[in-house]
Image 1 (spheres, one colour):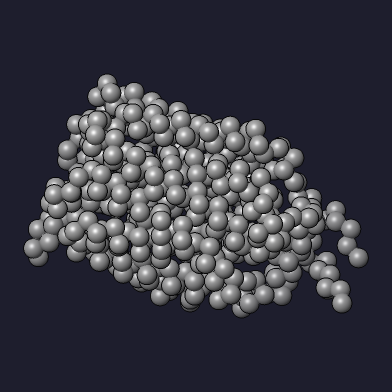
Image 2: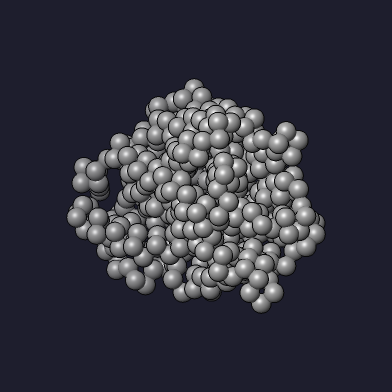
Length: 450
């Protein structure tokens, strides 16, 4: 039995544009808030470290291991989370994720021994696993690729916004709440920033709708608009791998995994060690340090929004990913040079360049997997790419922490991670062909509809 063809209303561009604006304004701001809070709770340990490791008498290596073990939780639970999303839907999945990581974040305030730190960081990663790839998958139900770039860029820019806003906020909280109620400033940081995640988790089931056909806030015509553009995109892209295990046997899947691994290595360095790098050039006041890091992450936010906008405008992802990753690697290399010269301005400027490039590469990169796979392969594939590649977040902090403990400096580790991120540029340009990333979406008015 043939599926019904969309009505003529589905092919009026002005009406379609209004429909997709409605979808974006309904879904993306809330998803962005969820991702914002997830990142606040993921990386506030970078600020807590400034006083926590002295209070608890921990080494840099202990901190680096705990910061990175978060990504082991990601690795083991991301694919199951995305497969569960396909069964129970995005609203319930996001509720489960946010409630879990919010509670664990609050419990972080009460760690004393390294093993407690490791267990809670692992659990935090396990609960958060599936959020980013789940949202990526969720948006493919609602938006075709040529409308998804800006939405993805805005959503993923929440990571940079959380760092940009969260850095001075962390500095304020640590100054304002130090020793209040007998708790240290780093303890209050975990408590105050964990509670909003629990609240947002409860709200998810009331705000989100899993698929367009279930949306009571859309008219039938608006549902047709969405169905028509998604069907058009599927026809233009042609055959893509649907079977998960078959997709993993293809070299393209491993190119994507390795590429994102290299980008994540740079990103994890910025988020977990950015405050420590600035502190290393003489900034001791946590409020001042917070504002300086806010500047760094503001460039990351601009990179995400700007590169996503350019990628959508040009309908191109390959060069936009490669150039951005190259700038990220260059920034880390320059940071290692200026760190050796003890230049505050140089370190902040280099980290800002790296943030703009590294964070700017992330949303555009996520346009690539849908060019190679669809169906179950895309559901699990996005999660596999994210979970395996995020192991870089486990290794990069440990590398920096261990080298800092043994050599007394961050410079060598920064240079090594810059080289790793530079590999992403080579992988994209040498292993992904231009015609694999430039499938144009034809105007629906020109489609031959019968």
